[in-house]
Length: 431
Image (cartoon, rainbow, N blue to C red):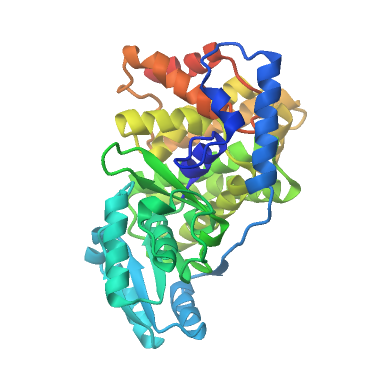
């Protein structure tokens, strides 16, 4: 799962898990009273202590052009004999799944393939994969693809070990037993799902996104293999790359940032600025693909601990209402939110600018922060991401702002923005 799931978890809207204090965030107000702010801060501290603040597992990562083969050999070395590969039909048609099968069989591990995953997979689709797991009596699960495939694999592994259906895994720490051995091979560089503690499935009827949150569903092994990303089209490369940049930037300026998450966020941002344009223009550039895969992983680690902010809160509304791809929505919203917060986050944004070799000698923090924001805009333009969303309807503005404020106020953001500031951001997207 990418930021969407952790976002809803932070905002207290996980189906089956609602932090009592956080339900107060449903209040629609343009100005947050002092007692309300205290209540929100207490809620965030409780969440940090209960979930985010605790150490969580990380996968053993194989990186490089032979990473997939090394991961498959690692599965065999764990003594596993059978694996269910959870993926989508396009990857089967491209012949990439056949490569995974070949590596597994060569290592002495039998495998079957469930290729029914679609974007934002429904609980029903995940249950189809679960049925195949049970029919084949597979010992382990391998998610191969973008965030949707890896999320589906996470839920299948947890449900399969506990005799549950996908919808019964929704919430926090469901299932008494650990998931089946779980592995991940991402084919996009953006979501960071290979290292996050949650997964997203959609309700079959309402299409609402439901979150499965459990530190145990972090994959044991992950492969960051650029050769699996070479065929990714430029628009998807661009969108997923900007998703990773948003993870890096929002986690970096948040109040929960630590020395570790800051190091991860800085490294991710620098690699993205240096490599995303080339990865979009020259998809077969393995060096650029390797850097983007690592940047996505670092950004995933960073936002898993430090969370995201108002960029994701607004972007989620564009995705759910108008089906704007998540990375595209983040890219459109990011510079506008940074404009609103640049005085509050100027030190952190200036640090990012300097680390990414931006600006001129003698610039003060605010000038460096502005330089960073303009470079974000320039990057989006260079990789052909639109700056505006013509799908936003005037009659939807108020509800978009309400929902974004409800979610965004649940994050450890540099400052709680006012309702009129959020509305200004939304209206700038319409121009």
